[in-house]
Image (cartoon, rainbow, N blue to C red; front, top):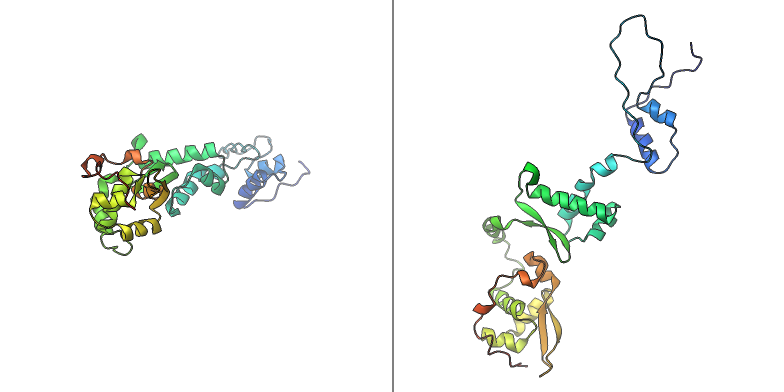
Length: 251
């Protein structure tokens, strides 16, 4: 009989604690890992015929905790849900403390999952890559339902005049206040101030001919529209009447 006493019985939480110690760089004795996962010494065959014992599971490699990777997609998904702006890969990688390459793979897995690839169920929202990063959006197929919901939120919405002015600037930027007013045939002073205050429009320079201030759209507009660049806007510019005759800057 061996004079070495049997190891004390361990609670189910102890193997996890040992793995975390290894992940953090603390020395973990192989004997401890073996004992934690039920490793046993070979013993002579017993006289009785007991039920065969299952072989112990192999101890995981030192310094690696599977749970640290298993929930990466969930952590990235949580960041995307709570973010009120697009998140670039570097920001996400910093938040989850993982390499950018690994985070990109996680983001692409999440995107594919939402799209119903590999036999999954497609969601009512999608993950888009924009110029400023990744962000969740409702799918265009559900625009009508979303529009009905948003109709009750009147506070802070842009007026029809503001939307028309914003459209002119988006399609004809850089454009002066006078050019916008000529196209719309109304004064746009107040509306333009509102768009600038909302961060959707900004000054981008001055006309070389007259010195009039020129306006253009901002990255916030791209985010609001869910597009990467103005090139993705619908081809509506030819429908804006009077544009060609409005190139004389008006102060």
